[in-house]
Amino acid sequence: MVEEKNTKFCSNCGVEIDKKAKICPKCGVEQPIIPEKVSNWWYFAPLFLGIVGGLIAWIVNKDTNPKKARKLLVIGIVIPILYILAYFLIIGSIFTVSMSGAREKARDAQRQSDIRQISLAMEMYYDENGAYATAKNMDGLKNQGLELYLVTIPKDPLNDEDYSYYFINNTSDSQRYCVYAELEGGGFFTASREGTFTITNKPSANNLDCGR
Ligand SMILES: [Zn+2]
Image (cartoon, rainbow, N blue to C red; front, top):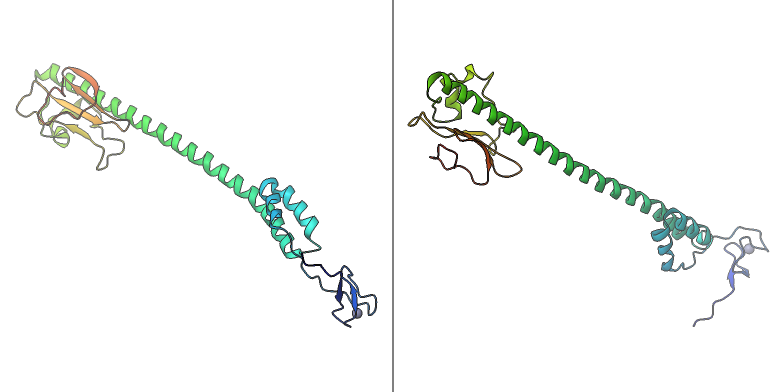
């Protein structure tokens, strides 16, 4: 091990003085702080104790190595902030996921209610006409007088490429119909003369009983 010298030379007059001297005893000029090596183990203080560790590290080392002491203090301040931010991000994403799950359920409830309404209108139509309204698709239903029994023909709450209501072409068989919605929670909610059902597989294009 190299023996450390206990003296230094005054920055002003050059006389050899005590290493720890802040002011030269001869000329009275303040001595610049020569940063000493501060062990990297000190990083553990702010990393594990946050602001408290940062403060301790700063107080202990500020005279020997002000730059590193400030760095340790800053780490002690920043680390807890990062933890708090991460905490809110996690809480926020959990909340968002559960909210979107709730919205999804609400839309599926809306779909079931809409399909039931169409089903009810179809039965009312049947009671009066001895046949169901016939159409090639959902849009076609609008011209078949079904709106007499509905305020409007409902649309899927999302009504985008992935979600809309489907009506199987029943122009060749007015005694049957199948209308259904795809559910975000999985499966399909169907209505036919057999009633309303949730099924796993999409009703095939020619099944006017919705797979019943
Ligand atoms: Zn001096």
